[in-house]
Length: 68
Image 1 (spheres, rainbow, N blue to C red):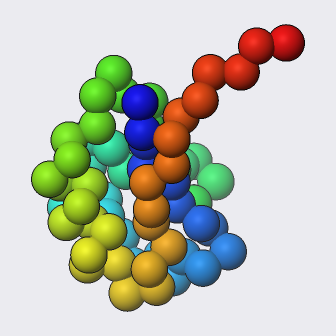
Image 2: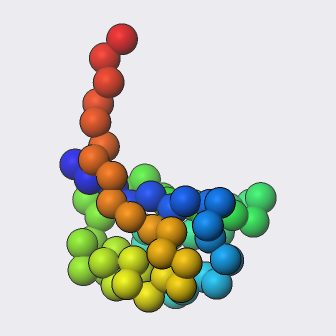
């Protein structure tokens, strides 16, 4: 499964992603944007958040299960 990722080093804290897709993006207690754990991520809403991000810091990443 793929999941959205926020590169916090590029994030400008505009809260656009939280406004567009609050079921996926939220502001943590520390004040940073975080990606919530979801069984499935709504592609269309995440894509909208990616497109409207002024710093282009949101992207998809394949969530690979690692075995140790």
